[in-house]
Length: 301
Image (tube, rainbow, N blue to C red; front, side):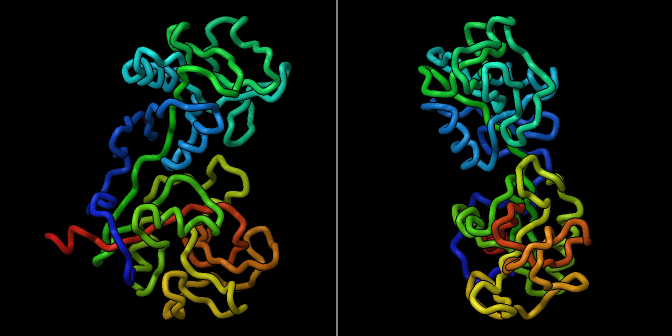
């Protein structure tokens, strides 16, 4: 349960459905989409999508492609020539891949065969205005009039006994999780009562966050805001360095070996394969982040 934390009133609602998107995003078949701002190149576009808790759109079906093309055609200004998506290739003869996983792309909408080729070794697929928003291959470097399409999961937020909880869409290594929650005036999840523990487990069991996300080094687990980085075996909460008054370790934990049996597992995750019990984990791996903050509606209402 939360201790002391700054908050922004708009960040949490009392309860948010799994098909609700942030302002400026549109929902389609389990994901949220938005057209990003003018971009310098694809690397800037990727970074901006990640700041929005998303990634460059990875189109995998005709239906999704039709939806995204309609979104771009409706929202792109007249001076926009195209929009990056998350499909790329690293050589002239190479296969087109999804950026997040490096796996071969299975769906394409290139305008013509000639527009699949580019002189650049590293090529990116873009929605092209001149081709009625079908795809063309372009250099990933700076292009005039380019924007980008981001995709992310719907919002998943619930409130309980004076605190609100939010599952972020993208996994992060432990070093970034305080910053991820701090951007919204929240802190990383801390569990301090049996009632809160049961609530969090129920929330996670019913969440739509996938248990295997398309990112390398991700285990599908959720970070807890506790570590023993300062003193081996002395587990403390990150927010105020206080001792843990309640634990829910899985059998044999904490064992300091982590999910991949690697030593120096000084951080803690809720393990989806073990009914969200606590496991010690190496801090360098990517896991989902749950943030918590004060329930503004409980104060004002």
